[in-house]
Length: 298
Image 1 (cartoon, helix red, strand yellow):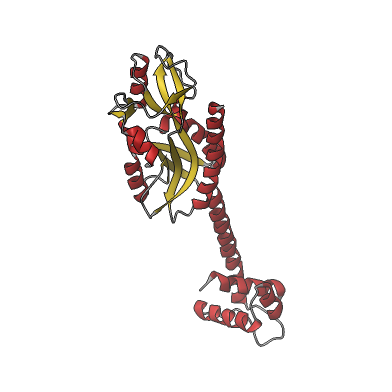
Image 2 (cartoon, rainbow, N blue to C red):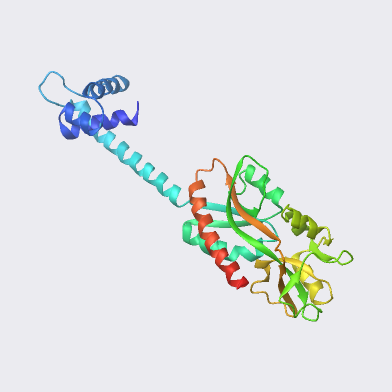
């Protein structure tokens, strides 16, 4: 028994004519007639009195119609619920990000997500890129915002924004009055970079040249910021981490003649049913963060 067969019978009750009912259901009249007979066979009762002219339901048919109306109403409600669910995922949406991004983007993400998915509870996960991809594979998170590239054919990535790295230095540093910070440094000088940032740096010729003259620290960005403000050391920082920064005695300079940048992307599973909604979310995030970055660079 198919829902479509119930719809045929319901149309027949509405139009009281086989051809009109068939036209309303976009099928041929013989097809509708055959499916009504099949429904009678499945139910083991006679629904239509075929001994009289026109369409006349039997007593069992009339009783069945009242139940069929309930069933079709429930099916319609189920379809509506499914469509609404595609537009607005309900339940919990788990979003992950890497430590060098998470503290600086989650406030904006939460605000945008609450507008995009008003019926959804949000949980945020902070972990390395490799860990987040594994969590995505195991359906523990549905979306991750990380740096590119990602070498996994099971996920799809959407570009969100490109973020420059800036150089943080103490307000007492000799170069603090400069407009920009020249890279690469002379061979005998090194710039600090946290281990997590080093792992995320773009794999291009300029990046390799710059990173060959860096000192890797197994510290957080906040620890690096503290070291910079209390020494003559300088360090790489993602631009977003310098926006609304409350730490005093530190200044951030753009680099020249080239800028080291990282690509930030959103990833989800390739077959995720909410993929189209996540693409729209990506557009909202891209616009918001691009404005932030552009405003900071001006």
